[in-house]
Image 1 (cartoon, rainbow, N blue to C red):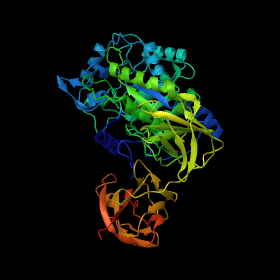
Image 2: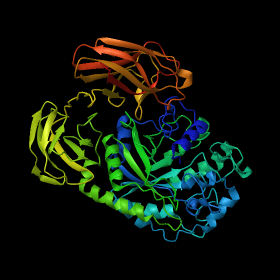
Image 3: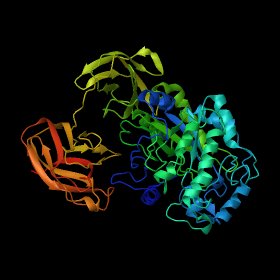
Image 4: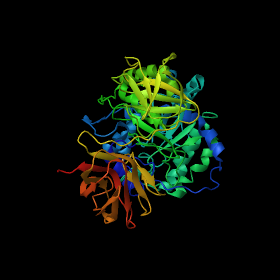
Length: 594
């Protein structure tokens, strides 16, 4: 699995055909849409919704990266190897035969499947996804397709996937399998990011798919009974052509109802987007998605990685993701003894305590109806209920929520019997809160309404210095191609698409310096555009930067406004771009010196 940006960027460049505006560490949105065919059953929207229902309601799952790499635990020949733990074979250029010797030392006698499942369940997690085979080619179950597996190549002589399957069934937890279908650094013909470093890795990739990957995928889909795996999590589709992908796809029919992600390759998008180590600014429109993230800086165990995320960060990440309609797949990296590191357990217990009190505001919720809130926090919703997760308790005890809908009742989630006072204002409804927050990390205020929320669209207000900052997240996109990515508007491939902010509050008549922050690859510069502010306009030309992630800030010129109040700001191309107009991050209006 990819982690840090530099490695992820290189993987994308070498393993995929990358369009212009893809995030560097996200192989999700760049795969072209697959065509419907007979390889998998065609389903109606109702059938898909029924298949995805449990996953959409779950919101929170555990990722487990466990394998032979937990033996060296980040150190090779007495040297700490940079990068992530499960990539030590690659990052240390360890020969195939030498790396395979670690298997003889892999004896996780302290592994207890029931304990692992209990840890996940107590944390509030509803499903688990574990590595059945990572890029090092080592199978974490008893495989007939290759003896390089935990039963045949180690002293352990057990199948941990079977034990986890039994424990998950007992506890009502869904179990999914990660499988590295393309990269395999052990078996000849398996792909490797950039290039092989050992002649033993050379061979025909199609033969590798036929003789290793396809038989193993069939094994993990059939060994553990109906419903397991509930998820198949592909990864890094290096050199995965459509033909190679189609050697694996028909096998999914062996587990009706299975959910699979977008990393198979070959043009197939799967069911879920998989942003890695980050949370998209607004989630994905019309796509199910799941942020996968580490608890420290590695997926597979590294003995010296102690950079643990705080409980506050984990809970607020979960809330942020749920507020955008996604799932949070949070990773643990067990040791070679079979133990989940204690710092992981401690944090998961704390998250579980919060979830026990506030889970109703996370499970089975849908995304927030609001673009922006006036307080630090997030919103999730269910029919007739809005859940406001308040991160910073208002000092004045007043919580303004941007709706005009009549509120039938408001209360704290942990104190449902105590109604909170509600009054109306121009900005929406104002709720009077108790003096103190119910939780230091996130307190949940429940607002019950009838019907769908009627949202107040807030004005973008000037800052303390009088400047007005317009972000991509707050923009409205009019057109069929441009779309919001993490923090920018990308895929702006048509001169018919425009970007606008319709609710900008100009506080005073003034001359403004117009500043643009954008990126544009060298082969797509030169697009002309117009910025319209009220009844004034300004023209400019996009100068290329190094690439689509190399942002620059330029001063476009000055505009003088002779009226105040609500004003629209529009950016529109005036000619068709070569590839795309730009990746637009912000437009800023700065009061010019008098």
